[in-house]
Length: 478
View (tube, rainbow, N blue to C red):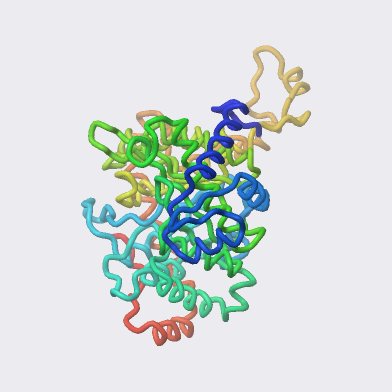
């Protein structure tokens, strides 16, 4: 598949050169002292918290970034590597709220919701990675992240992406992961967690906690990648070109740090760039400009030969309506056409603040369509079908041809949610809209194959190790 290009190659080069100029002349404010020490040791200029990056230093280390990144799963059949397995579909994550699947009202999400979502993602074929979709409002104070990780591990065998708070929190989830894997050595042979942080805070700053965690996982050789989040008009220039320059500088600074920690550390050029609605300051993750910025960042990532992706196919809509559909579809297809490898697309509405079960199910069908686009058009002699066209001839029919029968289930996506019936058939089936059909599918999934994926003996060990751990039990949607 060839990719569309929003930028010319000259424009990509200008962004690269401008980012290097920013890094060399302005640099970043780096709050975490050990990071400053690493930068200084490897040739950067450090003055207090300000770190400036000589052009040749950035060029040296960015060339060390490997061209691929692997998401490992507890079940290796779900392992995915980008770019060769792209598009990789990842749930959008860390929403504080959820649309209650019974009442339809928004409320705070809890660990029981994560159990349901984990099972849903495990069963839906379009999803490749479960980035834990919500927070857990019932988490004990000292178990913020393991209260999210535990139900995720209990009901999902696909790769899990997780974010921690401080280093103590990080060590806690690693202890749980080591136990589930059968020991630290076994885990490190096949690390089924991918760690994600936003160490670079726009504009041009690095924080303490996320930077510490990125350094830790890079040093340990465990999967980790950062996301840059410039917001044009608020934390980056009110122009897409300026936001691309600043965002690229922020990515290069973080990627350089990771390579200084351990050369050859895989990473992803991951983005969530937006253009603010300056009428209100609204965070417009559903805006078409978000899609355009991702398309441009994908081109820059290709220039560096680095896998890329990010939060795209999102919506600002408060309900799963036409706005949610067109915002998701337009930016997702832009990302596909530009060659993005990873899409954090699934399940969230209201600018990443709320999870909706029906949206997640619909996004699964969108994901399958995206994968069909990536498969492209086959040009074998049989698929060109010249001889068949001659054989059928003018006025004939292809409906019973062997060529048709052999391809009828593979050439097109066999949608399960999108309605293609005649209106009379649709009415006879209950006149259900796609929201209702998607919720029915979610409820059906919640009533099948719901056994815990953690053995009872391991459950006992985990509960003994983590006193007061949430139950993590999956309850069906009534």
